[in-house]
Image 1 (tube, helix red, strand yellow):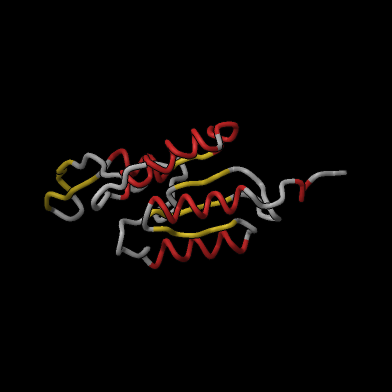
Image 2 (cartoon, one colour):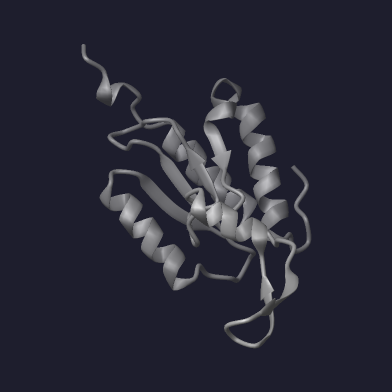
Length: 143
């Protein structure tokens, strides 16, 4: 795959999902993105309480009430391997690091037996996913 000069997080994530759908096609539908961090349409409304115009994001408020959580990792792979229940990954642009809240989510998910990591390039994400997918499969089988 041709490397982009300085891809955005979205571009890296799209490349990962496209590659995974090809390389691990039998599991493609189990790699999920929660659209929590994307930009939302905001609008100005008059706040009687604050007595001024404020910005609100109606879609964001609705998503929060539906269970969306700030800082949740970008990708979740619902495939159990090697004693893990699944894999979660935060994607960052090259040279960027996760926010404190994102790191806290990764640690909390590790505590719940998920393989949790963050990566800042397609290549490092691809390597981590391949490593994970090659772990022993049958750890949870009844046999």
